[in-house]
Length: 454
Image 1 (cartoon, rainbow, N blue to C red):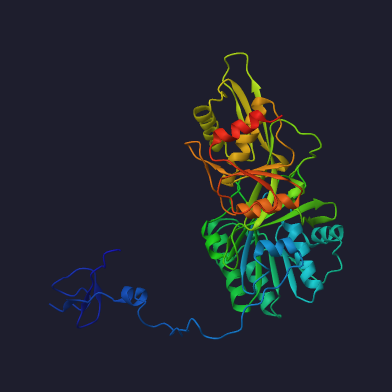
Image 2: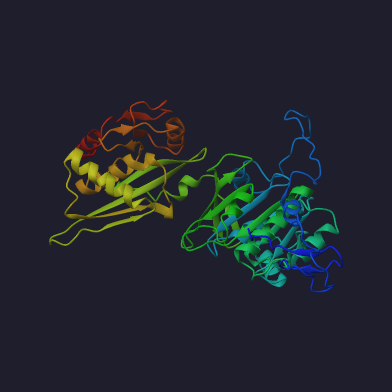
């Protein structure tokens, strides 16, 4: 805080001087300059203990109308949201360029508009004609969506306040919006934060479900200030490889539902199609058993998904450093699992190249995948295929123990529903769910079963 400057006021003529003098320079009177008291403007401006509007408190159990979710018409989208759109909620959706964010939201807005709800789609990246072209390709050109191409938040809010609040407001994207009250180009930290605040405030005050599309960085994080994720109610990530047809909509933060729920879509020529049984996307044709292939019942939120883990071991003849390549799993986790197999089970991977892949471009983060990866590695090393009707799951400790995992019964029920007959996992699995369940206590037990298989 700057030190306040002193000033001296003449008691005779009122002139002000920055220093004390015996004689006033204006009226020539003697001993009339007196130091004035410092101004209290600072304390009046920054003291927030008074001068505001009284806030009315409410009881926690005060009766009120419960918020009713509005279905989007896309069951997978509603599943990831926790049951549908909540009025007054703010949703931030991120994803790689070309992954299908605009396509998904245009389909959802068209479904809501056809069901009698008001949907507003504002594009800051495309012209209105380009959006209409996409709508024609998706077969929703006849949907009564209010479409606009604008980037000024002031113009957008002025237009919205002049009519009834819509049920759904889509802003594509927040990085293209700008406010004339904030300095800086669109996409800067101050602009993104300020524009998002104004749009979220409008949504909260009018009960509008707001969806903000966000750009992502090369690391996959949403571009802009991190506070943007704190401001919204739901943060969603639209994931997938453009070389594969599947797309996964994942909830990373949800104030109105479960976190880590996923919705699975398939990209087709007519837009995104819902996938009711995602396990079939990630399982290749399994007519003949092949070495180095194991099926893992993964769990995403409350949804079990069966994925195939593939391993390849290549022996090196020279003294070159062996390569470790991983697609769809944590490379550090693979290094740890190879060390446990060598130390606790006596297997030798030091002179071999190891390649690990999760089929379909799926990305695994479930620690229960350790046993499936170990089974695939041992099968590839021994060149002995695993049974085609078997699933493997469990977490491996550094001591070589197979630790229990959550929701093993849900995993096995999904495997049994898809025709699998044998399950290998921790010793305390809760129910076989129709599978011929075989418990594994140590990683060495897994190695023995694979080596003994035909």
